[in-house]
Length: 300
Image (cartoon, rainbow, N blue to C red; front, top):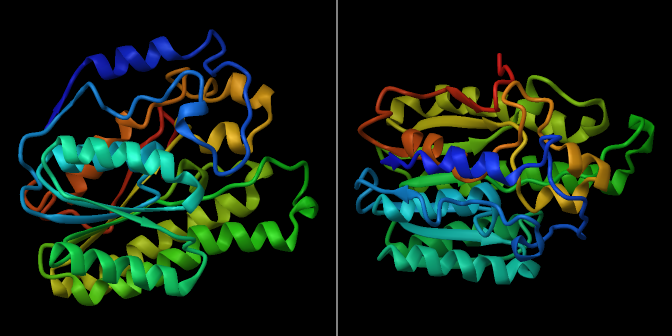
């Protein structure tokens, strides 16, 4: 894996003086093509070196944001990649498919709402059938609502959507995947700095991310004897469609400005952590770990 130094330089050029981005809003789940500026997923910068040659990966929320960056990186490292996503995100999914196939790997598109247990089971079954197995599961899909002034403002409907997307689906997909995983396989969950430094206005979202961190360590203990590694990446503020789709314009303008590095990160800046954790060689003795990609915010 080679990380081009242009990644960081490009990321710094994309932010405003406040560390954020031009005021903008979308309806959830949001589309990459409607963002200003467009996120950097490593399309022009990520260079693979065969770390995942011949492996088969399933990435939830793989159409955009961190999921797309990971899909591109995995393909360039030699893996076939299946991505699940919401049906309304089809344009983003097709763009990601093109990048996977351009890297010479197989791509599988799996539209569906993972808040349904049957969808979770099916995306795993379809991946195994299409690729002949499964080596890497990335539980990346997530949802958050706009910040609220009080936990009293969180409705049952909103709570249900956040918990089912972020936590229930994680359980269901992992339960379906584990019987297909062999020694040397890995599960990588997307947690968040919110698990360690929760924002009061994101209480439901932060709660699910804390649960994912606990789930990661717990499952690593259970699956260790099978030689299956379980880890997590905890991103900080990353420029993805989730931000303009769930935040008011003034928050978008300041997004990421409160980090020690003074800016939000780009999806491409997360990909290396996911590649490292998936690599059977580089991370052979890494399990139950959380890697922070936070711009300097602490994850302990």
